[in-house]
Image 1 (cartoon, rainbow, N blue to C red):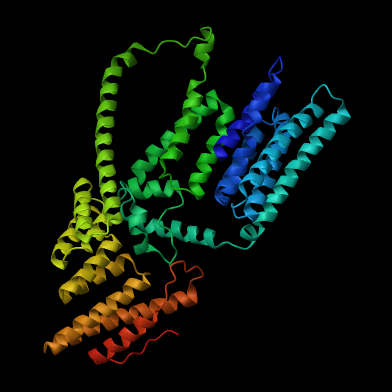
Image 2 (cartoon, rainbow, N blue to C red; image 1 turned 60 degrees about the vertical axis):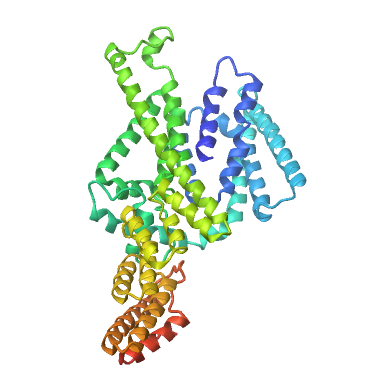
Length: 508
């Protein structure tokens, strides 16, 4: 919405400066989307998007200051109307009555368009100096009113709630630990989502890295980062040379990617390439010199067209096959989740994994429906596709406990804790599992082995209690609600008694 809004706003400059003047219908159509774009941007309540849009707009006004006075006057009323609409919908929590809400939308939209046209005529060159100053002042006042309405609606979030900012700062700092592990080529796709729990310095919830640049560094390293920046720079140069009114939208894309979005959404890149394509469609200086007809491409480029087309076909066919396999795997997985018959669900999940063996969620679901030995093979096979995935590691630890294999349970519990240290629920379950294994060994007469398992379990409890205490005293943001549970205290007490050590560490 920010990109579309800025594109429409800065397109009004050339339109209003045309000689002879543009027809009123063209001006109306040009300004028609301003209110819905601005309202949708406000309703996103994304402070990062607002900040990026504001900074990009300011940069665009500096570059185009000679011809943006009239567009700002024309846009003032629609932008103020969008702010009023946002305030109403925010107060109703987006649940306004349909017909009154539609009538309000229609009234604000039509009224703001008429007010914008009136202010534009009032401040036009044909009016006197006094009327021009009045029209400009009225437009500025409407913009100020709109800004005041928005600030009043979100004042609490802007002034007092900085938790999101602190969490994202911690995320970026923690990400550098992963970047240093593979600085040149990165660690592959979804690095942050699969690994952030192993490096997070506090129990925040953030499976998405809210910075496209850092996310590219994690996934593809410096090599991919250099290629990305080269592509962004090339597109920026093209926009600067061919269609400068798109620069604010381009700047908003760059800024928002730095502070608020990881660029993992296909729509983001469609918007980026749309900007580049619009700039490329503008006739170049060569075309202007040849009477508006672009010169034909060089002969050497023509010779490479068949090879490039063939390469594109191969890539498209390969990508389509992979997409089809992913689609079929997802469809089978969804059918399994809807099935009430466990055997039918297991068959669907097995089919899903044949289509897409890298789907760890299907592997986890299937492992819960089959006997422990078969579940272990499924989980290990899935772990080969997504190494160090915390969910798979915890599932392998639980599976080892169900099979009664204490050595495997201890190994996989340690591996899971290294990847997911702020998971209170799984820590508690691991203590219960180890206590049951220790009791089973004790009942079987293996007292030495029972005490060894119990000592290891109590060591995990001690680490858990210490981490919970440190989190309670030090961490401001605890999104994962990491704390020592009542059950963990009980399991820790029993493990201490079984191991023969004294429980010294408790957390209130």
